[in-house]
Amino acid sequence: MMFPNKNSVAYFSMEIALAPEIPTYSGGLGMLSGDTIRSAADLKIPMVAVSLLHRKGYFTQGIDSEGRQFEQPAAWEVESKLVELPQRVNVLIENRTVHLRAWKYEVIGCFGFRVPVILLDSHLPENSEWDRSLTDHLYGGDQHYRLCQEVILGIGGVKMLRALGYSNLQTFHMNEGHASLLTLELLDERLRQSGQSILTDADVETVHDQCVFTTHTPVPAGHDQFPMDLVSRVLGDRDVYGMKNIFCCEGKLNMTFLAMNLSRYINGVAKRHGEVSQHMFAKYKIDSITNGVHAATWVSPAFQDLFDRRIPGWREDNFNLRYASGIPTDEISQAHQVAKQQLLDEVERLTNETLDPNVFTIGFARRATAYKRPDLLLDDIDRLQKLTDQFGPMQIVYGGKAHPHDDQGKEIIHHVYQSRKSLGEKIRLVYLPNYEMKLGQLMTSGVDLWLNTPEPPLEASGTSGMKAALNGVPSLSILDGWWIEGCTEGVTGWAIGEDDHQQHATDRCEDANSLYDKLEHVIFPLYLQVTQDYAEVMRHAISLNGSFFNTQRMMQQYVVKAYF
Ligand SMILES: *Cc1c(COP(=O)(O)O)cnc(C)c1O
Image (cartoon, rainbow, N blue to C red; front, side, top):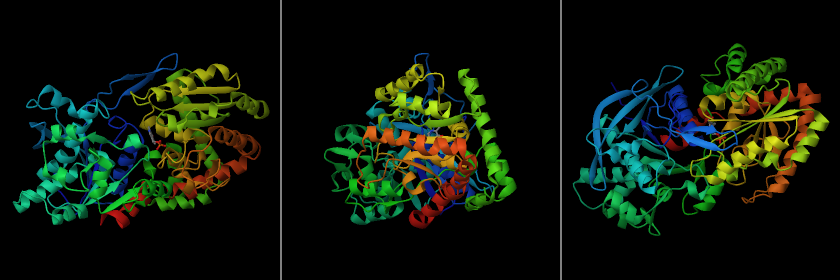
């Protein structure tokens, strides 16, 4: 039974990380959606979320003995994890009727408040085999497949919400451009209500007043664009294509422009990303709300116990994490050692390699793709070795999937893996396969230093460093994305390079040198010789950054700035 709240926010996202056993996410965007919904439930924000079922998931990553990624389907058992709803709707795709059903998953907040998540599914006997496959693969197939999926998400999603009784939703939040076609359905609803056949400016205005859009990347490939002939083929001919400044841009449907044209509020996901986006899309007003992570999901069990003892109420009100400043540093170090051992146990289980809990350990995990430069740390292996001559051994734990079509990303994984051969005895490196939610939790909490080396200004926000901070793990990171806001040098972690505010790429060689300099002159000496001071940085990571870079604070900002 659904009890639709009239004032609900409808949150649309192509991927949502709901639970480790439901692999319907690829990475950062899905994690953020999941954490958004978890915090909405904690805060009792009336919300209903919409996504696709992704019956075959994203993919399971394997890494062969040469360090080559291979992909396996990640099918999962839908029936035991979700509840099928009786409602049915359909959408027109290439003039065929595609029937849709919905499955419900409920996210339950810390006070028992529920946010329903509606996952659309075309796997019905009424549909052709091809149409049945449309809700199978997250980010699979070609442009045609993607556009059909986006029709289901945007148009099918609005129709399903109406069928479920959400007649008067306050706000439609498009989390990235994949959901932009929901605006078309809202416009069509206006036509049906008015009985007219031509849209008026007032109709457009009404839809514009209902929608909110969040953009997540300055990387051009992250903004879906479809040629108009494909759009006409899939969606049929529509009057709206002719409306100036709304739909068509240089012969293409650009999902980001469509969303921006029909949204009353637009934001980027960190202060700098807001500025970069404003620069990219000068015609629009673009604000920023800095991302966060869901604290209770990402804090390791050892730190959960510690926080429960020392700062009760931290789950319900994350601002309490500020008072981590009063936790004795030896308790923080102890909790960290427990988290570290849990990671090392998992490393052993996955790779048969036994790492040493007393050796300084660096973590790096994110989507393996060129601009994130996962191998920057390995640019000068001689210099890394000199560090270990001076300071003793180190360990490096890597993780991250490359998109199946990203050959460059796969090559980087291979390069990282192969570099093991030249690292010598004092540097141990493991690449953990299939980085997903559970591994994300173990890695971000179990290493001693979280490394992030993207090429500025392409990191919109980044969130794994926030997970690390909540677990008392400081970051060493390029000044881009959230780290521009989170880094207080030597207090919450350390910067690689400087921020020249120029929004252009930095020199790779300079960045690598800065990375090694920080390790050599600051971080290693602190870790080995002034252990107490390292623990102080860990404590500040929690009290200054954990207390702020969480989705509870983020959702409060969405409520104030975007939703109501
Ligand atoms: C947190 C997380 C991400 C996103 O990390 P970024 O730092 O935002 O790139 C991706 N995958 C997994 C499994 C995660 O836990």
